[in-house]
Length: 324
Ligand code: UDP
Ligand code: MG
Image (cartoon, rainbow, N blue to C red):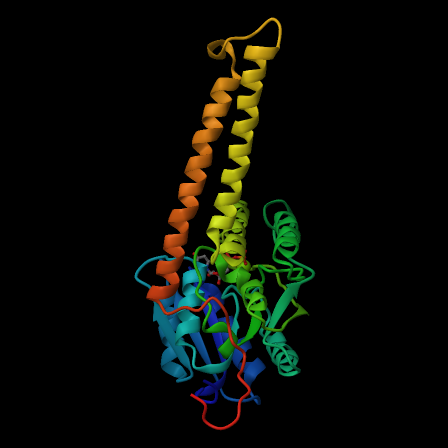
């Protein structure tokens, strides 16, 4: 698995309408990396409608270390990063924003930290230069929630600038806005994750692509990964559990019905008692939950067995001789 990497470092940059930022950032990256080991720079153009592609092709023509992947349309930052990771040929992969907000001067320090015994080093924009109302404050709250729920203690999941060992990164599949959850997913898989304060600069050219709405997407993604991580091999525990709770509720409200009909005075006939509706609804819900759980069990088996996916990850096997 290791040692068939072509270069030491792959820098991966998703680009959406960043025409004026590309050349200055490229100059910064090359000067930060000159004197170090071998590297490549991969740009993914995510359906830009300005002159980004023209600028990128000029850069590419002058430097064989540069590769440019152009999407047919806008697929989003996570998709762009995912394509970059797939095409990266480096032993270490470093994604960063193409708008110049991340500082290439941080790259050598990130690599150094990674080499000191980690699989992922995540950047922390301690002094962040973004709009406070729509970005910085919601992101603080979101980061706090993510850290609590995932159990991975990072301050800044959203920072694109991170350093990954390719071996840790390549097996991870990304959907939605999930690139920010890579450290959490990896850490659940047993990888060692560290954090490092990085420089963050205000955007001087071009427009920010996101607003407040991203925070909601991030929270939904968080629910998804947490659910998948905790229950993807045993969904009936979740749905069946909810089913049992609904069933108990239905049973209790049926008892209430009987009490009001036979023991209370004045008695309330069944058809005049709202508990009847409650108990019927809870009963139906209970059956739905349990059936959903059983269906999910079938899906989980299809998922794991069709792709030969195991429900565990093995780090290494200690054995002597050839004991296949
Ligand atoms: N980006 C992208 N596709 C998108 C949105 C953004 O490739 O659909 C890129 C964008 O060009 C930039 C990076 O992702 O290089 C981060 O975007 P932005 O600076 O707007 O986000 P922020 O820094 O505010 O998180
Ligand atoms: Mg930015």
